[in-house]
Image (tube, rainbow, N blue to C red):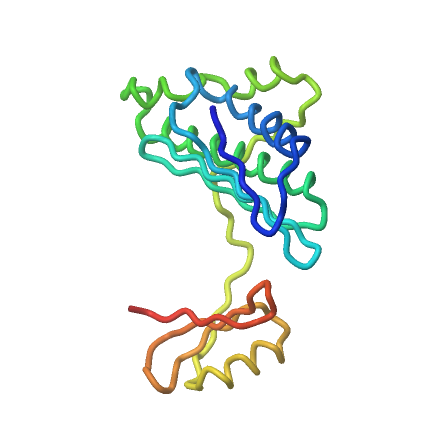
Length: 190
């Protein structure tokens, strides 16, 4: 698998590029034949925080992961872990959906990626992700009509990073949220 590595507001050194290539080569053990598409790695730095974003286009699937932290190498490790979980999750879904009927999709992934992972790197911590989603809390509440500014004040008052409300101007359900840069965003229905 080939990866184009680029930096935004950040110069990518050979050491970082080699580290990225080494870590992302771990993903090859999940495929019978390496994908022919090229992946994209974007490294950026903003106010002492490093962002690593990896995009891997595959036939019928787009793998993408992003991580932000104060350590570039920790972000790279985290992104690779996220991509591995995505691949395992997608393979599990394919197996459930097609139950070995579609040889083209089945042949795209290694039959047992966990055994392949252990054979490649016996020191690696391999965790199996459960595809079942468990809802641990359910909340019901009345949506009070309010404007966007009041919704932001309510969100800050309760200390959450998002707030669902009924927009008094549009009579629709909207969501305000706090962005990583400290500003606010609004999600509206179309």
